[in-house]
Length: 399
Image 1: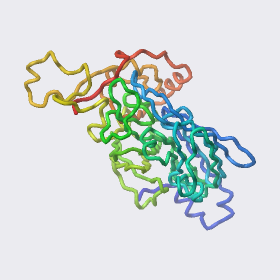
Image 2 (image 1 turned 135 degrees about the vertical axis):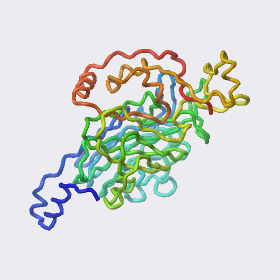
Image 3 (image 1 turned 180 degrees about the vertical axis):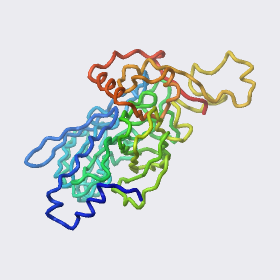
Image 4 (image 1 turned 90 degrees about the vertical axis):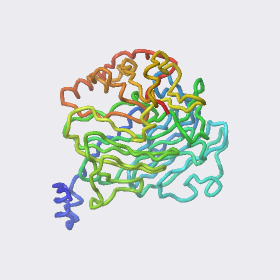
């Protein structure tokens, strides 16, 4: 078992209530969800009150590729909510969808009347209706909220709900990230996903498909936590290049340290959370992605006749190569300009975007100088360039 000085000292003093009460709690790292916003509560008579609205949302999951889905507060996935262990919480929920819905608080230990199980603890909230959820959260774990109507889940209705512990876990992390894994079946010229699909051609982290996912940028030597939340039809083996990590927690809470073991790919099942932690020892740009081959590509779809990976990219002009059985499989299509406006992409080598597709993002471990430059660009971001093909963004090989 790894030795952690902070934990060792904590065990030495655990018998002294006075010392334990006087010891300051470590300050937790801010929870970051790249490409997603946060929903801020209003404190009302000691209760943290959130305003949450289910509605139709239009989003851009890649340059030129629009998605019309069902989310919350103008976002797919919905915005992140954060509270502390012991907080009293009230959620004023409004339904702006054209059909009844309800919010299930996934992983929460709350009365069954507040659970969001339609037909059991509550009736559905009708279109135009309002429902108030209220509960005290005497627990700590990475929870989430989502519609408890299955097809609405497949339309994107989900978001993080993080319950911070009274005393942050040790060893303390310097960076704390959250990624929501989703799948979409989007056909040409149709931005509305097929929620009945069993195969998917667009895969996203936090509503963005690679290479449009905003990288996670950390300084060399920092300890990093990444919370992976899967709400879709497929399980996803998520792989991190360059590092071994420990899986330290699930949606049910933190694991005893005796159960940690090194790995570099973790299976995130449907409706599960897997938290991984590691020290960012090595400089560089490191991929984090689902390792299912079809999930590392965009816009893959089967067709009658020859298999295709998207209109306009079939190599009609190469008769010799087409004689090779199985050709084509993979395509190399660098297109960096549509992503150059993101400060987090500063300094990436030319053609970096060609390697990034589907459910894939970057962990960037950088020097203090590069980090300072990225922070400067965040304050004054560069202008956005138009994609080379504004109607559709393709990447990957045949399916």
